[in-house]
Image 1 (cartoon, helix red, strand yellow):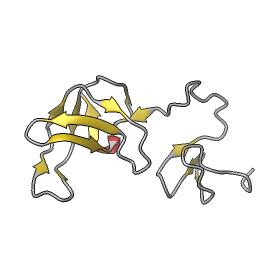
Image 2 (spheres, one colour):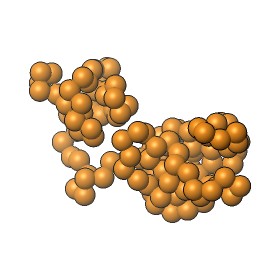
Image 3 (cartoon, helix red, strand yellow):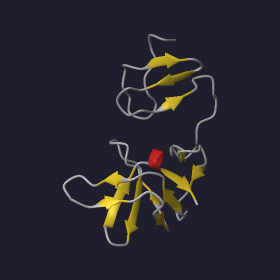
Image 4 (cartoon, one colour):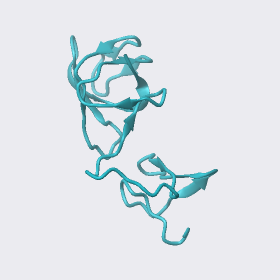
Length: 115
């Protein structure tokens, strides 16, 4: 089983076990190989920092100050974002949204909580 194990999200072959879960060092995806069912539409569940499942149109709150690469501005912790859109991005930024004062931006789900 271990010889054939690859990441179901990005296909990386350098996965490693961590207790009952397997981890991918390239995309950060965690999964349990004993789970028989996978989503039928190919979509991966996106979870916030507290483990709540996110969906398109949800409102989230940023949990910590986030620096924006290439800009001098910062998204402050506690900023509420309405109407998120889930995207399939390989760089870990799986939430597309618009933040007033900043504009359109992509966020990582690990830095938000469901509002």
